[in-house]
Image 1 (cartoon, rainbow over the protein chains, first blue to last red):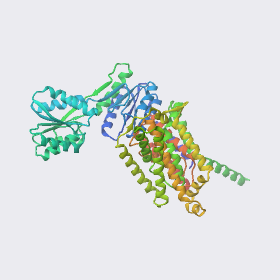
Image 2: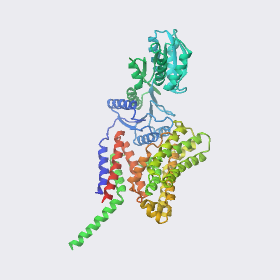
Image 3: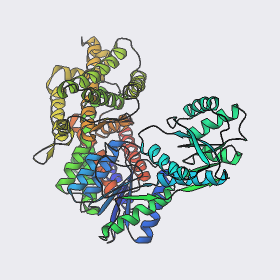
Image 4: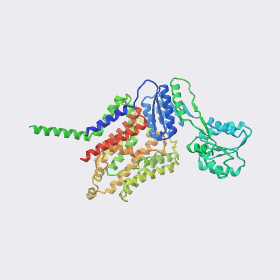
Length: 295
Length: 322
């Protein structure tokens, strides 16, 4: 009976070893923040698909949203002698020591979706500026280039708020018939979105449309607009395509939202990795296209 | 004649079985190391060995405290939350321009204090250890979120990174701290009266009390030690990540308890060693490292880890049944 301990351990290991692969192509490690979130599962799937097509040996490690676990697994990837490591950081500060270890071994690092507080070879993330432009173009078309618009901004200083606003205003500035009558931060928060919108409804009349930097604020604004009985008058556009927003689009209360494409993000990660390892020139920032979702 | 030789044979058999029993965790670890060194040529290298030791040192330090708690027939579920709170307080103090040394001392004091509180509730208020430390797990985690506002704390004196990230020669500093704590733990358990009393309390609390041992005091002390060592790990982890994470140490109690149990310490108390815990810690460390080196998909890793723990405990329990 007692000899079984060793035996079982060994056997379980051999079983596990069966999953291990071996080849001569590029070895790329991908450290994902959490595979409990469908967004990152799509990202990993996209990466795996591209790795298969391009003949890359891809090792995916999951940190379960724990910065310490992520650090250990990136260290393991470094030891394993990966040619390149792609990281979707749990935390942009906490991942820095792990990236430094990769640097010491001359392993290039790509950050995906979230950035790190240090220099990396390439950063791949959604093109929030282009997303803002898409929202603006759609809104302008629906309003026939004529109308009074409110912008609900995200947490001031965050890259998402800055970039989405930048793209949106770039387009709107050029359209003469459209006037941005108010810009208010509502901190990406639904309750905040509602109360800010309530105030704005008091302060302004004849509002034609609202662009919110994320869906949470858009949904909050919709509540306020609904309470004021103006649902049919005011068009709302959000950002992120969260579940509640898609439902709201089906119900017709939300006009449109901008969806990120995690699958595409995963594909691009591997494509950029291969280009980098082939010695090709790659931009420091690679934007991932977004998608407009309407009814 | 034949009878005698049978007896001889039984003796050998007995000896081998005892040997296997005593060193089964070590044999398991050795088996894993041998198998792994064939499967991956990166495994049995000095950098990777140091890597494994460094990775297990944070939980290993907590496992030393947990060994004492379990030996005294207790359990401490709050270690992960105490780690997070101690780390966050240390980080917060430093971010608020308190000196590094003072910040670390305050962080350690917070952890020790919470452990002390656990011990008092369990011994003086006579509450079940499972419930007290489960409550503390929630309280301390809540306090971390309150204290940090749910956001990581970063940006300290670069010297602070030495604690978790520095090396002496090739050896990472967390490994040195772990080694020192292992030695102290060993000496405390084997060479001091306090250590013998821990075994006595865990072996039979009633008998220990009748023998004149202040069992309450022993219990309070082991929980305070566990809190203190969790705080030490919290400081090291904060230094290693160069930031304090509000979610640090979630579910660490499971891995830490697994290390202790894999090391042969009995969950009913009174039986176990620090050496065993070191082996247990290395088994968890080698397992995590190997699964990453082999590129096993992360979902299978969880399953594999759970199975190894289950098998080890199952074998232990089968053996104690007869």
